[in-house]
Image (cartoon, rainbow, N blue to C red):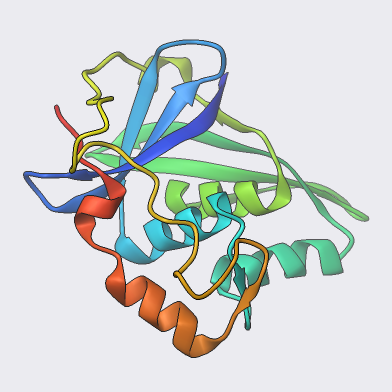
Length: 177
């Protein structure tokens, strides 16, 4: 297993699907994983430390883990079968260790919230072209907060809704195969 970090989010311009790019920690190898819009938004919100008035699903998972006395030791992205990636949450708690099957996108969102390391099966990592320029449509992290909020200010439901509704696919960037 190789430790990775969330390098960026992108948008695959051919499928209009969000892509989270995991990069080998201290290395150049990458793993793109196509994910849904809600998971992409959850990851972006956490990466930008945007506070919400009410918890989202991944925030709830964090609260459940901590509330039950557990810790997230690590996330492992273990394999791909028929273009579907598999991941595991490795938890430790009062009754011992447990591994839970989970989608990589959910696992990444939870790992970011709990500051847990993310690992990938080495055979899944590869090299690819990533558009690093700053032109519109290139990879970019969407704005952290709507103009009416600062990064550590809690967003009410209307502010959050307005922020998410105003995100454009271009805000997430472009992914080139």
